[in-house]
Length: 216
Image 1 (tube, rainbow, N blue to C red):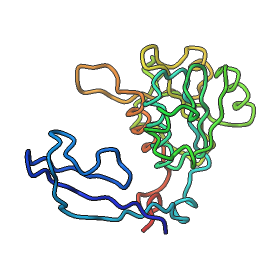
Image 2 (image 1 turned 90 degrees about the horizontal axis):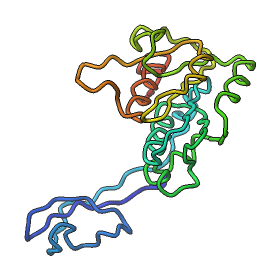
Image 3 (image 1 turned 180 degrees about the horizontal axis):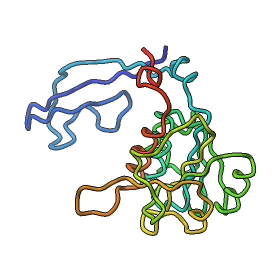
Image 4 (image 1 turned 90 degrees about the vertical axis):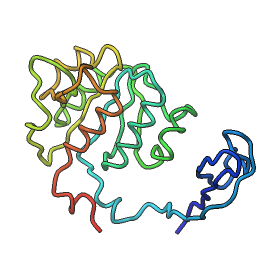
């Protein structure tokens, strides 16, 4: 099993407590005041992708990320997609791909486990996926939308679409959706960050009990 070793250090000058992994640019000096630090503890974290979790991957779930501008949002979506067992990510339009360093920075290696492909035209792609039998689900506020909590999940090949941070899901894509979902908001803002919204929806779309999703 491969592992990641890290230390927790405490600054003798300002009292900052912070973690540092092997090879991190912080060094042994405090990143806040550059004072000398003392070792508080050392820990190892297993970095192996456990095969039984790989076997639980939801091959019937994929995500389509259309015209999301932020590389950090894309990386976060890929990381959540891996965590919730999505098997593929379609990256469309102006969406940056894992070939960019900024995507890799937030994906933290998830791009190695979630296969991905780039497509210029998401509408054209979705038309093809519909012919192949995929159920198309958009995550967007719309008069046709139903609350995420009321959505009935089924073991059906499903494409979950998330769209641009400002303009949302392309209306051309919404017309092709079999269902449209929205996440109810209780605050004053009308929407979540796209990466956060994907994480909420991805969890809700999982099929099975928590024990089936995350076997011990």
